[in-house]
Image (cartoon, one colour):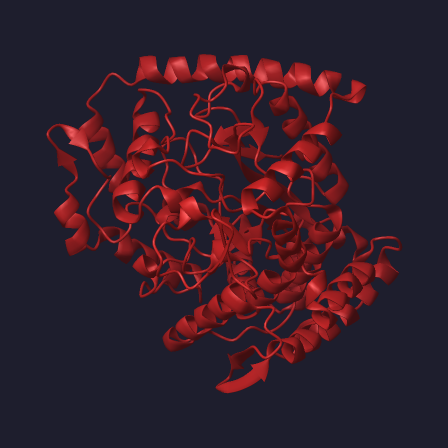
Length: 516
């Protein structure tokens, strides 16, 4: 574990630094009351999935995504997320919001609805990209849901931190360097988040109809991993074998952009066999290893808000890193909105801890070793005998986890003394209890409910109903709901205008987009 040699620079710490900027993106499937994936179109009352800033869809037409604004207090971010949930429930016409990361009961693969974004050039691009994911990986894995946590340091922090670090170059170059250092620290330790917050130890059999998955059966419709923490982040979920040999370097913005761009521009024979445009219909955006950079699934991404029609990698190259996106968090099935304040506080602390330590460069071979650590935790993190490999040595997960939490606890105490009531020490100690007793992890608690209910689907449906009942309309929501109704109407008008403006040739538009 890297030494926290830069903690000395935290003397005379400015309280304004602790106003971490965070936003939440929570995914959830629309499901019928029988526990099936919804086949209905995106509800008109939610506006346009293409242009609405707060309510959209991901891969599937049924996979909703709620996006909060940026908040400097976790309670405020959660409050906005709750309003988005409660408003959406008023528009679902009897459908439910699925509370788990692994999907509802799925139909035949071709009956899983792909998201539709209209006839504008950008809308067509988004839908074609999803068709490409279908042809490359199948539709089932695209129905998994997660919580993405967008995080950045307040602007006042960077000039002071650059001065303390002896930096004399451009501030944005320094910010880029520091965020990539954070990412390297995160990649070395993200296995801990999978253990502490993984909550997908079981799945409906319809997700894995074949028998070579290594899971155990429960009744007729459920499969589970005895010690699994996150099937979502395992080789059965997002971290699939199709990308297992893909190397993307996170040592700097330059190496990241170079290796990612190489994958976007390198043809791949199996995808060439699929074809791009067949009989006048697009099957995918390109035949490269990656269609676009978003296809590469990483547990953390450097981000910059892109302009309309701008590729994310172009935005990063042109204007630098603005924030980072944590992507390895499962939906908490016990939390009405998929995440709670205590988890947010711990992730805030964890990210700041990653930022303020010295994080050496990660060599190519080490990237794959880190991925293997994560895979072990995702598949069997609660196994009391599980060992991970650090610097060539096998170490028990709980022993290494204790070392990390001890270091986090030291930083948490310093932050709590600076801002009394911030609750960082309490957040760390809550996680320490999970290391001592694996039965306290969300994965163990959820698996216990699944076993008690007799199936993954029944346990999830019960939680969906419970959360729905807890999320009844609140008088305080009236103004927010009015604003969301206006936003829905505005988004529909914006989509219509985009479609009216998309009169030139789509093929030429796509070519220009991919050349960025």
